[in-house]
Image (spheres, helix red, strand yellow):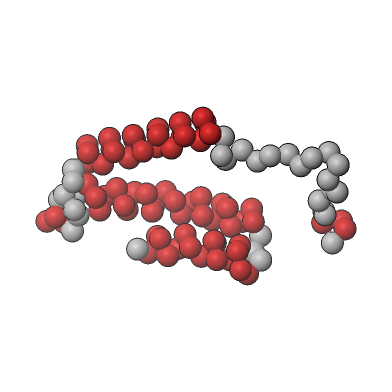
Length: 98
């Protein structure tokens, strides 16, 4: 839960407090590693050490399949691709003009 709360901090900072988007991205990116490891450990480790007892191999296979499916979905649908602005659209404001 600690890492889930920590990853929410840059999200809230970016969304509502106007924090630097690059700094928020990297902070969230760095926190994802221990968050993922903590979730995988919690799922895979035996109940005797406060895990769910699913098993390390099962966790690896299920999460691996989920990753492959999500990457394939994005590759096929291209929902993550940013569209370029039409040529007749006004230019976006830059730091120079704000």
